[in-house]
Length: 346
Image 1 (cartoon, rainbow, N blue to C red):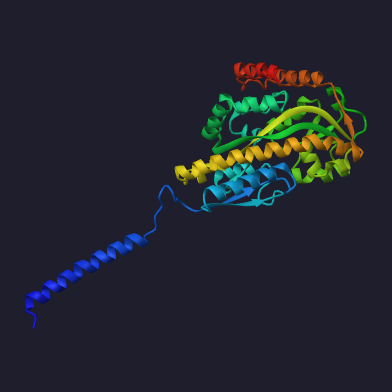
Image 2 (cartoon, rainbow, N blue to C red):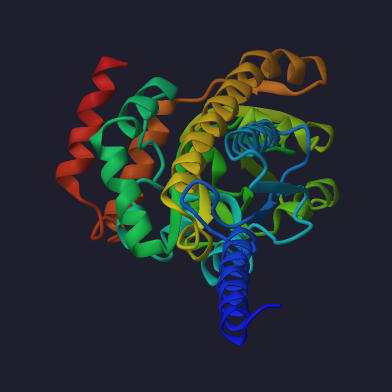
């Protein structure tokens, strides 16, 4: 028969053992959020273009790479054709946290940081190689940091959007800025986009991207500016007659992640996102370059007249427009001249 003392001792040992087991069990089951694991993210990626556009190739590359690197911690859903936000609505949605990730133009970004206006001006870059060299240099790194500080989103790449030209429903060849005098040109609705169109000599009408095809078809506008990519994938060639190779914007844009999302990520997740951004850039660039090499012949086959205008006349007219209207006041002219000097290598 056990003594009272031995019974109490046994009970005390059992209580200590139970507490120890409970503590170990709780520690094993408690939710953790280590640097390796982090939060789960489901990112909504808004695109204004359709699934044939090079932007889709970039978006898919980002989605595949980030889901691979994160082991599924970060997942991405793609929304095409402005089904989430319009072109003008993307930036405010991203900075407010309503949207997680999207492509951002430098023209829209300039509404939040005036020093971006210079990069959005016409004839800033000579060609793709010139643009790529500038944006891959310290100039691009410093610009990315300023965007993060001033525009409220994280730029994950500087991808090539294409060389923008004038696509018109009019028949008279567009050879010089004087030929643009009576042209009603559609541009996206932001000051730097409108200035770019006016710098070419046109009368500008802002219009949502989704409305451009019908506006060309009905004659509400005479022309639109786009690289071959947008002109092909949106089938603008069906309702126009000429494609004038003005090359007025060797365009780049950014893959932007909402800072509200970025700030919730671990350092490891942020590294994965940056790496996936470079995959987006490579895929986007490659898709645009491939299409640029093929589409001029396609357009000619569809009946478009391909016009080779006086580029020097357009370049001079554009620069004089910016200067005479006081639009270079926000430009870093030392940096501008440095970038122009780099063009000689390309």
